[in-house]
Length: 444
Image (cartoon, rainbow, N blue to C red; front, side, top):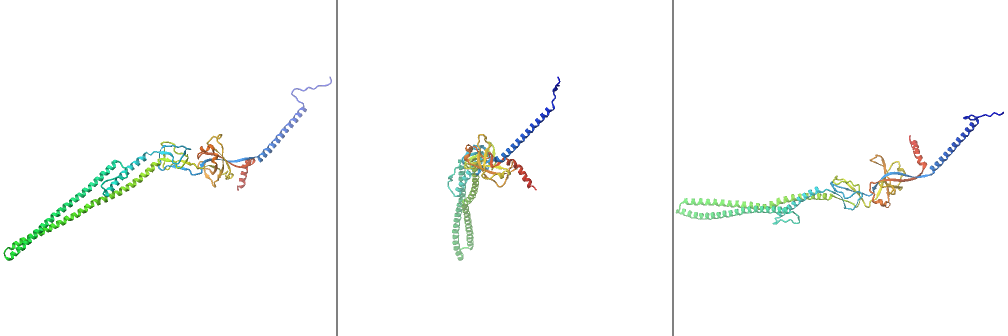
C-alpha cells in the first residue's frame, strides 16, 4: 500500500483550525461591542430627549399649622385659685355665658360673710346714731335686713343713752330748782330786813326828836344807828347771795342746753366715722362679691374651646394665667406655612396649595385645596430650630372641609404642597450645577 495515512493524536489541533477559531471569536466580540454602543447611544438620546421634553409639576413642600384669622378670646383669671370643676374639653362647643371652669370659693365666701356681718352692725349703728342725733323717741331700722341680736343690742344702747341724757338734764334742772328756791328765800330775808330797817329808821327819827327835847338819851340813838348799819350789811349780803345764785342758774342753763348740744356733736362725729367705715367695707364687699362671681368662669363668646391649659381637679390657676382660648363661631381658619428662604422665590400670591392634616389617617382624609394668600416681606426665626422662615398664609374655603369642619382645631399640624410652574426633568437635574456655576462666576 503505497499511500501513507497520517493519524492525529488525541489532544492535538491542526494549525489551520486554530486560526479559523480566533478569527470567528474576534468578529463576535466586535459585533457585541458595536451593538452595546449603539444601544447606549439610543438610550442616551432617548432619555435625553425625554428629559428635555417631559415636564413635571413642581411643588414647595412645607410644614404648617392651622390658625384662626379672627381674634380668639383668651379666658384668663385675675385672682387665680384652685380648680374644682372643668365642664369642658378641647373641641367643646360653648355658648356665651356658659360655665367653662369653677374655682374653689370657700375662702372668698368666708371673707365676704365677715364683711357682711360688719356691714350689718355698722348699718344698725348708723340708724341708732341718726335717731339719737335727731332726738327721735323710737329707734327704727327701715329697709334693713338685720339679725335680732343686732337690733336688740342697738335698741338697748339707744334706750340707755336716751335715759342717761334724761338723767343729766334732770339733775341740772333739780340744781336750778334748788337755786331758785334759795333765791326766793334770800329775797324774803332781804324783804324782812328792809322792813325791819324801815321800822328802826322810823324809831330813830322819833328818838332823835325826843333827844333834842331832852326827853331821851343820845346813847339810844347810837344803838339804833348800829342796828340800821347791821341790817344794811345783811341786806347787802343777801343781795350778793341772790346774784351768785342767779349766776349759778345761768351756768346750769348753759349746761342743760349743752347736754343735748354736746351729745349731738359727739353723735355727729361718731356718725361720720361710722359712715366712712361703712363706705370702706361696702367697697371691700363689692370687691369680694366680684371675686366670688369670678370663681365661676364663663365663656366670653360663643365658639369652640381650644388650647385648654386646665386639666386637673385640685390644680392651681395662677393669677392672670390664660386658662383656655375660645374660637368664635364666625372665625375663619387659615394655615400658616413655614417657607424656607431658598424656596420663597418660587411662591406667589394666588398659587394653588394642597394640604393634608397629618393628625388624621391619610387614606381616609382627603386633601384640601387652597391658595397662597399672604407672603410676608421679611423672615422670622423659629425659636425651636433657630432657623429663619417666611410665615406664609394659605386660605381655603370652609365648604371644602366637609366632615373635617367639626374635627379641626387651631394648632393642628398641616403638610402643605404649594404648586409651582412645570419644569423639564433635565432642568431639575441641571439646577444644582447651574446654581453652582452661577455662584462661582459671582465670586470675586
